[in-house]
Amino acid sequence: MSIAVLLGSTRAGGNTEQLVDLVVDGVSHHKYGLSESHIETIIDQRHDPEGFQPVPDDYDRLVQKILEHDILIFATPVYWYGVSSTLKTFIDRWSQSLRSPDYNFKELISQKKAYIVVVGGDDPYIKALPLIQQLKYTFDFVNLPLEGYLIGKGSKPGDVLQDSRAVQNAKWLNTQLKELYS
Image (cartoon, rainbow, N blue to C red; front, side):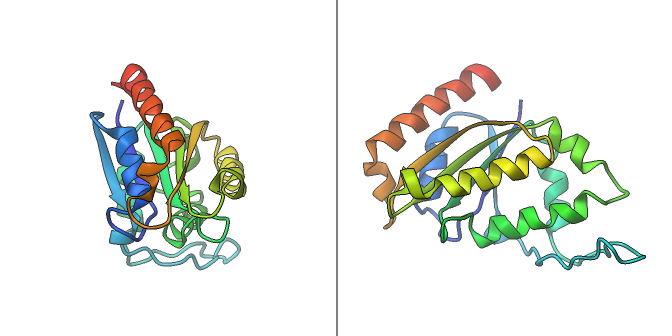
């Protein structure tokens, strides 16, 4: 099994990345820093006679790479009770992939399994739940099974490592990934 981490943080080495690194420690994976890719916002062309037009950015290359993996870990800080803009822009572009004649995105992504790792600074164990629900509905739409999620608390870099609950849950998930997918 191969694992892809879709890192939606714009802060290198920040809390979200630190927590997801605990999850995948010692597990073969590939991390895709979405902020390191150039992904344009979607222009809705679903109802245009020509449909979606090619966009000169990194999205198509990135989504093709991600679809090669079996496990997808969506890692994002909580931004205004939702996912980061980098992750949201990436997911918004799925509308284009769903209509691509080049591959069957919905069939391919439905063969994966998803996990969510989120970190927020202000009562994230409650306030991150709308984000989890948002992603769950998104995954349901494309038949991508959500296997679990992990929430951590942190604001300044390194804070999440002081959240014993998040660290313990990350280590537990790490053990599960090692047992199930290694």
